[in-house]
Image (cartoon, rainbow, N blue to C red; front, side, top):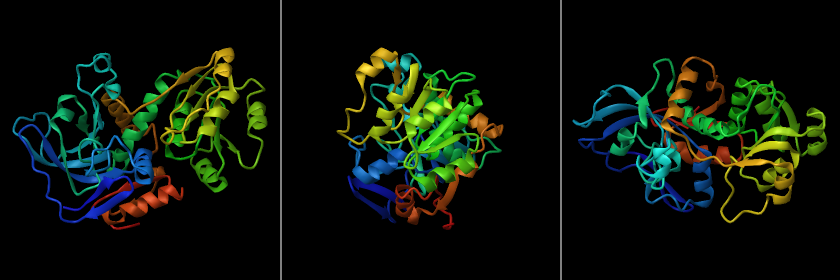
Length: 351
């Protein structure tokens, strides 16, 4: 079996002779149809990730077809397409018992503790079935679209604590796929204005073509703070999302927030990077600061429903499909910001 393997920080390789995973009585094996590349995958490729237990096949934004099914598994059948919520909770800890399995004390994740979808085949672990993290892919949703459901579910999770309402102003730092999805979901809730902030001019304009309802600020070419004041009538922004791994964005978000504003530190920073939040400004403006991590099975299924109902057009974000042999190229293209979303399809030809 071919698979893209994380050996250790900075060391990856395409293996062509791994054994195909074997089904067990309480698991299933899928043929991977599509697996998109997450920003977390990119950071692991760039810097390593101590949460990954190597050697590990990465990839957790997966759609696949069941080709083998354990005798104890019910509710699914060979030949069906399935999708996954990759962050699997234990089901019994404090967070799990309160409906937040993404914050489980013993969280186990596809592509981190279990082998993932940058491969021809993947075994779905028993725990994923036990915790309802496996669900049917909607018939009208393509393989590529299904692979994008999980990262959108993470955006849903990130916005739940922000309580975006009709008429709220929203500013998003970063114009990648996640930034664009934050804008799409804010629009669904009636936010206005929605402000997209990006220093890379070509990247910003490409994103704006996909979400023209946003006000665009190319922060390297204009005064960010002056322009935000103009767009918000001097009040500042009600809701701000840092959808990029940049500390300065966190600093700017605090400064640009309106009084009693809500800030989501959605984009994780590189290890040992800190010190960007002005606690006095948070204190005196009564700001609410929120984190965000992964997603729940319910959120994944909810997004699948939106995509099936065409409430969200996600296919326009799939810039390029890569065969498994070109996984390294997909990472390079994401690093250079020449694509919005890279999708690996093991049996595809490059396009």
